[in-house]
Image (tube, rainbow over all chains, first blue to last red; front, side, top):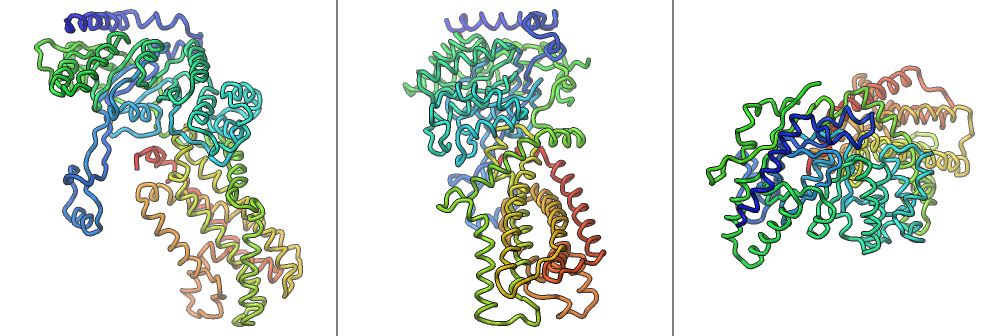
Length: 319
Length: 312
């Protein structure tokens, strides 16, 4: 049953690929400005064989990273714990086009946030490269600005840090204050903010530039219903401006509602990449297996999905 | 750039190496994407030097605002707040006045020993503070580095500017201190020449901090070492003594002469305490050292631009 359901989207994507290569992705161009056409003939973001391995100290188990014996002895003498490898992202290749709203789902520790950090240039991958037509702007839950500074000054600092001209900052400041919707708290130091309030402020800062490539790492999850609504409206606006959005979330309803494509990662591996309804359905079934303790069934399912996943192959063209 | 060149062999082959473990017989589908790496920018890649300098110039508003804001909030956790920017150097001066001016009455043959020490310390501590702060900037400014894409040298410059502003207040209050705490120093026009000395010292601090920053980022332990090295440097720059009185060996005197921070101390003492112009060779040593260290430091910092995003 499932296999049949799975076949549908696979066929679809084969078609997509063929069309894309034959007609030079003409469909993507219709909603772009003239000046952006040059850049838009290809994808907006290319994730080119990206792998990320963290070397972390571990109090359980021995060294996994080969180190020369003297280093190992020295480490032992100093009481430093051994270093193990944590593969966060495993040789991932993806291409995201203008106008796409890609959701990234997966269990905790599946490499979603790491991948977002890499795409945003906040972290270097162990191997591979990310290419983008514009600087990706990431809105994360842990981007902290200057805690001692008032919300308003933090907005100003964040805008200037993104290279916005000071006069323009003064122009857009009222609008950004409006988006943050913090009331009189906008004049308080940011360290007095609750996590939801801080999230609103960061959201306002990140949307200041009308980014072409926006990365949202559970950015809306800390907000209340009112903020979510505003946030979704603002994101719809950004999407209309021919931008693309990479979106991490654990709320499947949100993913289904907002995304045009969903990528499912599990322990750094790509399991599915396709239609939101299909992927979230499989994901929910998978999570149900895990919750019921059917680890073997879930593992078989993972192997099956990995063998069927539509992989992206990159070809370089030179203009 | 040519990372995908190796996987051109035909659209039918399995995409990534991970696809090899497929247990079912059916070959996995691949989606072919064409892209022109030359038309896109590699995220996080280091721009060419000229472009980098232009981007740095483009972020001047951010640098200025960040420096101002950092100075404004630097004492926010205290009750007196910004007053500490002026109080710190004054209290430093008073400490030495109590010990050497009131209790010991000793100057080891140096006229106005209190002023000699206080001025020297104020000048030297500016460098040690600023160099350490800049070298640690990639870790201390992690929130901004993580949050926004700007040339990382902008962060070092904003720290240098914050320290320079702090030092400007400190110098001002030390000069007032010298005018009101005995033995009184007569005011002189040569005090104005402290400004170029201060400017050259600032360039030196920035350059030296940038030179150390990549290494400190790779090996955080170096930051702990650095404060000791700066202290060693301080004591070997004639902070409590005048080397010409103790050292007769020409070679050791030459070591002092080519130490830019010794020159900063000697020149500022000439200008403020003796109202005389420093030797041309002193200006020469300080200018050349500052420019050289700055150019080397900036290039080293720029070369390692990508490494500041490495996970620590």
